[in-house]
Structure formats: structure tokens, C-alpha cells
Length: 242
Length: 243
Image (cartoon, chains in turn cyan, blue):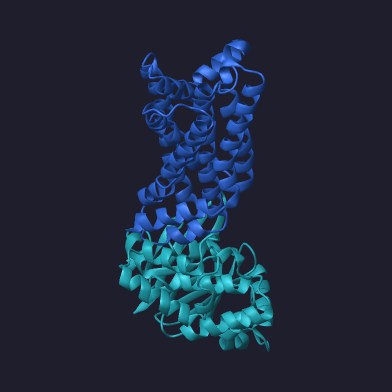
């Protein structure tokens, strides 16, 4: 079964089309990367799939639930790690995790179990009592990812997860994302080609809201006749421009 | 359960911000001390502890707008709200989760204000409790106004509008520390249209045990609170759809 199926998904803002008849499928367990320059429609696509904004036309189905007609069911199936760190700064790491357990309506026992499990999974045990606002960017991103996973989502959306991180923090976050591969379906947007190449099973390239290419990093390189995904991306985007 | 978790977070965020404590608790106490010192050196009828305390109490409540608006604007800008919108929390839980925890904070602030007044010579009577409780609609007005402003403004705008403009309006147009009729004209008429002066009159009447005119003042304040609450709900829902 497909985890995500979009059908002519379109978003218009007045006279501007941010996402233009996007149709694609993402199988369960896949890590799918959406690539594109600024304004390509990556974040708008994620927002529509997370029920944060209504599509102007078309629909998408997340494990069978429609984003248009069954948003509550979609919300039970997804987790979002937004572009910004999106943590509560005056709450401790533990309290941030417990907040997410609470808004998902977990019992006290489940809250404790989930907090301990995710703290262990992301190496947060030693900083559980620290205020989130005082953590470094890398640790805040880890916490953000852990918060997105609290609700045991079937599909995880990550919008530019390593934006602004140093090389070491980025590598550590990649390890955390790699550890999730295969256990849940992941959709990430990124500007970094090496990130898409290192992590993703398949890549979709967006430009002006349209899907220009879709395939494995190897397939996209072969299609463009280039040695790197970055060159392939540039070739495909320029072809789309012509 | 979900509402409780979100409310707890709202309370923690507000109470753990040292600036909130300084403005919310320290400022009214400092003002009471200042006016008592003036009264001791140059006695003025308006600065008597029984008259000035209800005014300071109303002025202090204006900081509730700043607290709630800042928190919501910050949550919008940091994308925490966006994250929470993808959870099962409902619109009603969001609105109540932001508003309800601030009410006990407002009551605690009023308690500190009146406790300080008692220390400065306000006679201890049961009317103090009435004077605190009668300001609940005023507290709700300021909280709802914060929800409204936080839904449409950035943190910077909130600082200007709620931190400077509103607190000054609440101070000047409430008649807390000068008689509005001394200025008269359009200023007095504007003050009469707004809820601040009516809230101060309510507090004074409750503290004096006088029921005269209370109904009209209460209706005016409650009307403004209802208006602010309706605006807050509408604008919060609008930004929820937009974000």
C-alpha cells in the first residue's frame, strides 16, 4: 500500500500557483526527498499534506485518509518537524516531550514510556532537565525530531531538517534519520543535495510548483548524464526552465 | 487531558519568563509603594490607599494582554503552533489552553496587589475579596485582547501595541491616578467609552461596599470582554486556517 498518494494536488495564492497538479506516490517505509530552489513549492506541499493549508484543487491520501475530507484521521497518522526548531523554549527537554504526549492524549504510563524511549533513541537522557531554549541548534533539532515522533506517526515530515546546522551536528542528525529508515515513511525537503543523496531512497525535483523529475538518486544522475546529484539537479531544473 | 497538557505549558512559559514576573508582580508593587510615599509627603485624596489600589489593580491586569499576546506571537513565529496544529488538539482546546491558565495568574497578581496594599495600611475586610473577584470580567477582557493581538501581530508589534500603547491607555484612560474630569472633553468621553475607567470604578465601589452604579459599570466591562472574546476567537481561527 502507498503511504502517500497525491492526485493533481494544487495550491494557488491569488494569481500565483505554488503547487501545480502534483501527482506522485510514496510507498510505505520509503524516505522520499523533495528538492527544489526557493519558492519551488516544497514547503507548501508539506503544509498541504499535513493539513496545515487546504489545497485549491486535487487531493492527497495518507495511508488511505484524505487530507481534504478526513483531516483528523490524517493528523493521527503524521508527525511534523518544521523548518524552524519549534520547541517550547522555557520548558525543559522532558517537559517538551511530555507536552507532545499530552496533546496526543496519552496516559501517564504511556507518557513516561514514550519520553524515556525517545530520550534514549536521540541521546537526550543527559539533558532532560535542561531548558530547550538554552540548547545548541543541533540539540534543538534532535529534540524537534523526537517531538515529531512522540505520536508514533506512520508518516514523518521533515522540512529542511538540517538547515543552519554545522557539519558535525548535521552528520549526527543524519545518523538519527538513518536509524528511522524503514520503520516509518519519511518525507523530507532539503536544499542540500548531499543530504538527499545520503539519506533518500527516491528524490522528487520541484520547480515552480511542478514535478520535473522523480527517481532514485542514481536514476536521476543517469538521466542527466552527470556524476553528482547536484549536477543532475541543476541540469534538470535548467531543462525545466527552457 | 489534552487541554490540561497545553494549559500547563502556557502557564509554565509565562511564569518562567523573569520579565513577566517583574512586570506582572514587581511593577504594581513598586507603583503602590511610590504612590504611598507621595501620599505620605503630600496628601492627595486620589492617592489614598483605598482609592489608588483598585486603579493599580486594573492597570496591572493590562500586562495579561502582553503575556498572552507575546506567547501566541512567539509560538506562531517559532512554528511551534504549526507543529501543534498537526496534532489532535482542537481549535477550542487551543483557545482555552491559551486563555484559561492566565486567569489564575491574573487573580494571583490581584492578590499580591491587595496584599501589598494591606501592608501599606488598607484595612483588612471581606470587601477586598469582592474587589478582587469583581475584576474577573476585566481580567477576561485583557486576556481575550491578548489572544486577539497575538493572533494577528508579530512579537515586535505586540511589544509596541500591547506593551506600550495598551498599558499607557489603561493607565491614562482609567482615571487610576488622576481625575478624568480634570481633563474633560473628548478625553473624558473616550475614557467613558472604553472599559478601563469603568473597571476602576467597579473596584472602588466593591472596596467601599457601595452598590451605586455598579450594574452599569459591570455591563460596560462585560460587554467589552464579550466583544474582545468574540474578536479573539474569530481572529485565532482565521490565523489557524492561514498558518
